[in-house]
Image 1 (cartoon, one colour):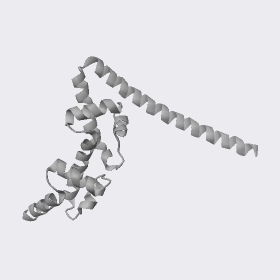
Image 2: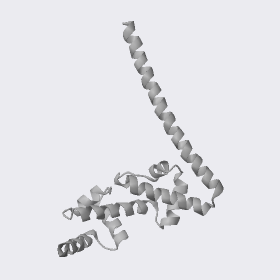
Image 3: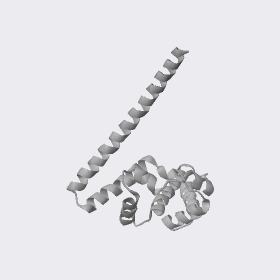
Length: 165
């Protein structure tokens, strides 16, 4: 019985150490990125830092596609690019001319269009769901805002264009 308790304690200790190591590595990575940002902020004017942050956001959105998660928030993006949400929101507004929701929905609309080009049999509701929109109403409104036309009209035009080729 004592051997089992010792073995159980050893396993628990090993698990605790593993968790600590993982957390330490994550903290080191975050500190290294923050250090780079601090170094950059000391040597660059504010506009260059803002542009750097905006570029990092765009790269993150393109590479990781977090917008596919319907409940993706400003705080989620701020955490991903290691900044605070107020500063991030102002930067997105300044460089994209959009608020955060419009910025995210732009990426969702572009992704929906990409999906449709690959599979022209997709229905509008499927496009909305696959691209991270919570509702089809939100998708229709955002699509029209981004593209200047309803998705049904755009899809019809793409089908006709594809049939000609």
